[in-house]
Length: 212
Image (cartoon, helix red, strand yellow):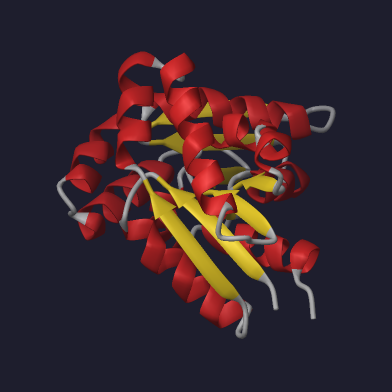
């Protein structure tokens, strides 16, 4: 039986990913560790040595529960977490990698919506690493949405992100954070591809790591 571990920087993500796993991978088990301070400190001062040390410790905490793979659901920290896989002895997937790969295949001009500045750079760098000739990455920060998320106004947060995404002149919209999954649903009528990481990441993880 496959066990998927998750490292989150917001408690709300536990329910999101648990529901997706029950839908897409019934029979799989899941383990979750949450540390909100990792993102808070990374936003305040960047991913410094202290944040990296604590991130590694949290990944080891998940790994101690013997998952087949760990998904880091924080886009700010995902690249760092992915590189720590060898150190923790378990493959680590950054949640936004499957999304980025799908986005660059869907269109040339990609708008990246992020509600935290700390996420914008890592997501754009990931998209650039996956890019095809002619890909154009358009940064589209929506920083006024983040206080709504912090206040647990998740409906207001989703609507603000969706409203902002509708203003973009792009071929593809990337919602850079797992927290934006609600906005993805609100943009179903946009007429252009819209990608958010949770569902596509869980699907990819199951495809690559499911065991009998």
